[in-house]
Amino acid sequence: MVKITYIGSGGEEHVVDVDAGRSVMRGAVENDVRGIIGECGGSCLCATCHVYVDPAWLDRVGAKGETEELLLEEVCDLQPNSRLSCQIDVSDALEGLRVRLPEKQV
Amino acid sequence: MDTATEAQGDEAVYWDPYRPDIGENPYPTFRRMREETPLYYNEEYDFYALSRFADIESHLGDTETFSSARSDILEFIKEDIDIPRGMFIWEDPPLHTVYRNVVARVFTPKRMNDLETQIRDYCARCLDPLVGSERIDFIADLGAKLPGGVIGMLLGIPDEERDVVRERVEAALRTETGKPMEVSQATYQGEGYEAYLDWRAKNPSDDLMTTLLGVEFKDETGTTRKLTREEILIFVNVIAGAGNETTSRLIGWTGKILGDHPEQRRHVVADPALIPAAIEEILRFEPPGPAVARYVTRDIEIHGQTVPAGSAMLFLLASANRDEERFPDGDSFNVKRQGSPHITFGRGIHSCLGSALARVEGRVALDEVLKRFPDWTVDVENAKLSSSSSTRGWDTLPAFTR
Image (cartoon, rainbow over all chains, first blue to last red; front, side, top):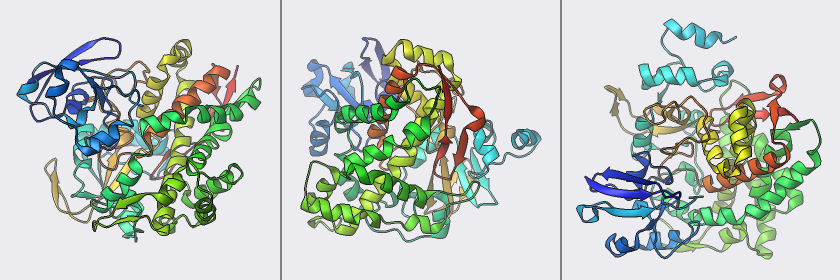
């Protein structure tokens, strides 16, 4: 189990234990964290699992694939540290990862 | 009188998607199904149904066992209809994948939010003439006009043609109360859009039709090509058909639910920042598409029973949305509800392509209604609820305003 911190748009912190191998998106929707939708279930189609990765972690969450690169352009309020959280798999190396949730997904 | 659910007190639970008495309030029946028969079999119409959130979420993702290739509508699965190529909602991977990817980058959060000003203007045109009147109808005055207008806008259909288009699609898909859809309704392939396609091809603009005419994609054989004329017509048919009645239902339910829950409505009036959350809760509480169907391709064991290959399986999204394992106090309407998202738009590769558009339309419509009519009560006697096997909602939703 890996501790991931999701920071809501109002500043509230949710610390969640996520199984290694699950995506950061699933860690949120399966643990009652409001602010990520993830309708396509991780198929990189809907762009509603948008998160802002804490700058200290940005280089450590893995590179973006081509599909994510293209789809990321379609989120609301894109920032340099934006990622689609269904494309970030949790591992022990990500223990303590912090991500901030956007004000809105749609 | 609620004889149907009363009589069921001591009997085995019964549900089908056609009976108007069950359709009025299916939720007690769904609760019993989740508790007593999480895998339900209906002998009369020969289908299985799942009602729990966890079962629905996990099995919807199994597209090999639960195929969309015979459609996602119960009656058509039983009939084994011909699916026109390019009707991606009714295709499995790899065909579904290549087509869905063509349109996925058009119906995104960013692009749908870019339509907000136009959607707001459209709402104002619908609602301004009613200001000062004592009655509005959420369907006749808004739900019947806005979604079709927005789809028409997206597709590039000229203003004056949009009502014609909407009526044609509605007529094609309407079912008689209590009866299944006719098979002929599945085979409507969007021929009515040919004239617009030809005209738009000669007059390209910044719209979906122009995009579809010009886009190059890699098909399932690896060939890079443009869409054929038939494929474009199918796409347009799917998008126009899918985005009309469903979004109209969302607007109708907005009027009904916020009319019936005045304290909740007052929260939203007092704090318009609650509008997006209110729309999410309306979607959860009364999903316009309460169930989707799949064709079962192989024997599968669920809850200790075998569902045989060749069966039709219904996924009761409206039941999943009330499952207290996922939504504490799920039968309460609460615009301040926290926690995990609903499953109204489905889950997985077939999740609703238009969900971002539905959300933007829903929240803008609610915002514009509340600005002009912060208070209303539903004219229950004259409201008309209608259920098909694919959508459930109001055909008319008149309200007394103050």
